[in-house]
Image 1 (cartoon, rainbow, N blue to C red):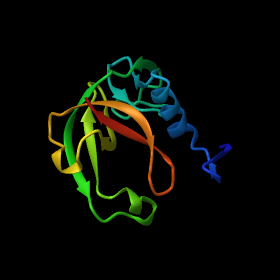
Image 2 (image 1 turned 135 degrees about the vertical axis):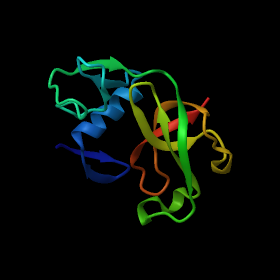
Image 3 (image 1 turned 45 degrees about the horizontal axis):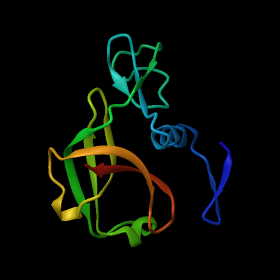
Length: 135
């Protein structure tokens, strides 16, 4: 892990998560697929469904659909200034992504809403997070 400086604070880089966010941010988001067609998110080295170790990078679809969501009104201290916010799980074909929903009032988030993956920052700590932007 490498140290990064962002927003005046030093933090430890989470190679797998931050590499995935870097790819999403550059418009080159991807997931991993085994020969059986099972999708998973990096930093996997083994397919969680069948145990295959031959994983290929496949381009993440541009959009997905919200499958489930919740609105957070009382958050952990590291997200206190972000409230209220919606968190959702969105279906992107072979994989599902979990992220903060943005681009709509948290109370208006609905199952089936089309979203696109982006990278944003938390209001509280300025940490990068996966964002599901409503289209």
